[in-house]
Image (cartoon, rainbow, N blue to C red; front, side, top):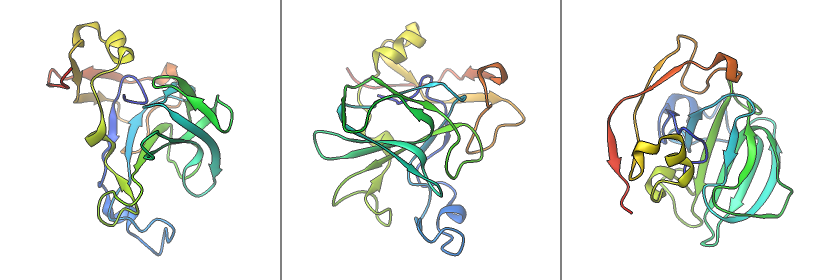
Length: 193
């Protein structure tokens, strides 16, 4: 499932190669592009486990900031990063759709957003050190998504229009009170139930 609702993507996997491939600026990254997906969110907004697994809580000052790393039963790993805080304990067993943290802007972040990195041991996209596009592995829409949009029981909205002059590729407003007017564009795709 999407780790945030509604899932408004502000940066896709592989985008902005000039930022992420610049070894002089970020020698620890050296990716051909963005190694995950960024979602718009406000500070304190709930973050959900995209699938079950064992969660580890960590901090990285020059990258993910506060993050939760979930190792799923198939050994793939989800990183949910730039959190304000994790609300689960280290080495916790988490269930799909369980609240695990809150959106923040910790680490290398230009504003409140959620980063979802998805790592496949001995796999992933070429040049991405095991990371791959999480969108390729999403299952049918969650009950959380359908609760937020009851008319989309069998569909997930995939495109949004944003009317907020202060929104950039990596962030969204700092608080719920500053939320821009998110408008769903009626372009949906079946997720297959």
